Length: 233
Ligand SMILES: [Zn+2]
Image 1 (spheres, rainbow, N blue to C red):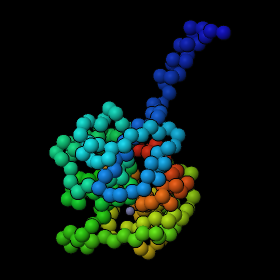
Image 2: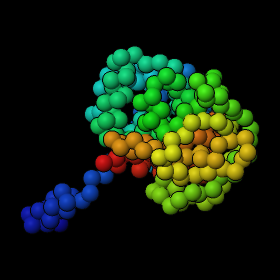
Image 3: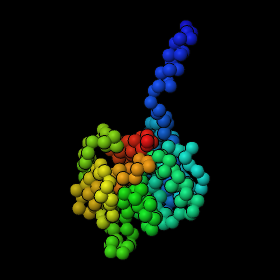
Image 4: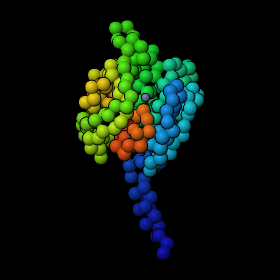
């Protein structure tokens, strides 16, 4: 039976009044500057995600990304960025898009304070002024606790994952800490929302290897982070 005109009008009104949902979420995954296992790609094979991959930051930011992607997942570790790249990354963040910063991307751009503040942290490969170099340890059992109820921690229970810890990072006191570890070789905060106001930025410290990429809790955390940042105001 065909729908009557009044029913079509009702359907149209309903679709116009419904909250804007982005389906699928368009994600650009940025790598380069650090090796990683291809198990990382499986993180993005989850419902509601359509993802592309840029193998370097220069490739990622060579043109305006604002109309093409909802979320950038940074898993790269470059030292510097061209003027064009700088402009396009900043324009994306300032447009209220989502950013998820994973693991070694906390080490990126050691001399770019805008990026440090975007991330809400910095890992120091070498000492900088009075700040000593940060340290890392592979193959650590990280026991992870939920620091607060938040859309990014929804559905998560405390879990343990074999991963690489970072210790001695600079962490912004203004971060909203979501997850912590009690592993003594790492800094306690392991996931947080930065205080960057123009868009939603979630930083996730674990994510070194396949044990992490295939862990159900880490996968849920990543999906939550992508979903929440995609709805940046
Ligand atoms: Zn690593």
